[in-house]
Length: 155
Image 1 (cartoon, rainbow, N blue to C red):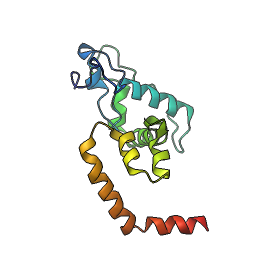
Image 2: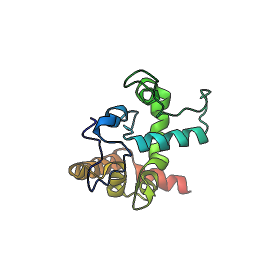
Image 3: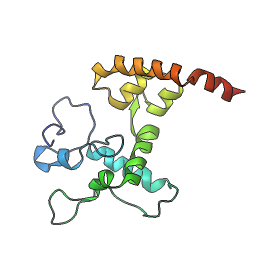
Image 4: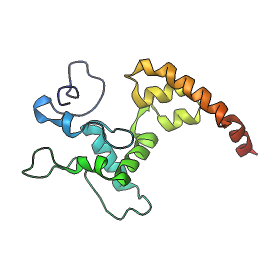
């Protein structure tokens, strides 16, 4: 994980991890419902969560990049996989603010019914999945009568 998520020349992922020896790739691997990955995303999620209150969350401010002193590979980053509340909060952050494609969030692309851009905002590096996502979305629109639902809401 540390090698796979370490920066390399020309890297555009923006993960914010240190080199392989920092073990950041292992520490900040994908966790939470949306698999938040990279030190930079854990930092941004921490700031978002500490700025925005969530109902029934009385745990206070948390730095999800903070490490446990003297204990290798233990820290607050583990909370995203150990606690369903934090896993859910990180997914909310990711959808609303945490990812962008063409300067718009996944939520903004979804509101515009742009499946291709939502997919690229979520994971633009997995281009093989785009056609399958589009087909699944088209089937879901029919099955759940999404267009009819939105028309009803406009009334």
